[in-house]
Length: 260
Image 1 (tube, rainbow, N blue to C red):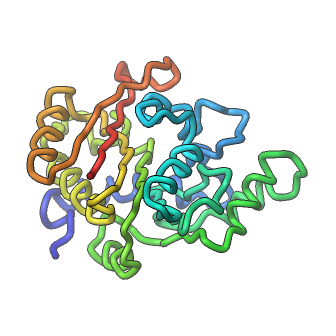
Image 2: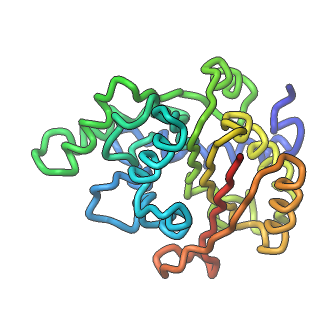
Image 3: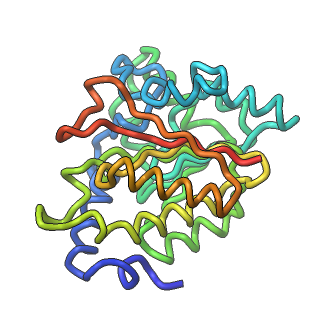
């Protein structure tokens, strides 16, 4: 399989994008709060808060509750995968058979260095998650074929998959220059999306994914409509209403995709 670099982007654009993509993972000794610790005082950074409207369609107020719902539906503990994140967003890791994060570098050590010496609830949450025996971080660069080969070796079949990378899906960071057009990146994002869906249980899987800001609502609606028709999924698009999620005049959006 050829890489996104050779398929979609010029060398200069790929190098720029790859550098930007890795920034949150490359800052040694710094945390990346957008990974969504549920007990954080910065509630707006949490997965539960940002994606609450999608959770409400399942009758849930948190991803912990959704995991329990999936567990009851499946008759087993679900496999949960966080793509481009550290899988920190669940309080009760024990309700999953596996909780897996996929990112360029494992940041657990940095989080523990920053928060692990305190005795507050946030520190306890980090330590509980990072010490869970059924949680794993796959270190893989998803902009390379070698990275995807590492991911595929795990033979993942996610019952719940989340993708909320924040930075590179924001309008001002996703382009190499102000002269770039969204079409330049459309193929790359479509390729990443298809590869991401290859990790999902197509019988009963659920996906929550951020939508890149560089695409118009019309383009996104057309893309997911065609996607649903081709693979038999059902997609609902949401706009996050909070002002905190607006960036460059755009509101953050995400899609909830259901199979089965």
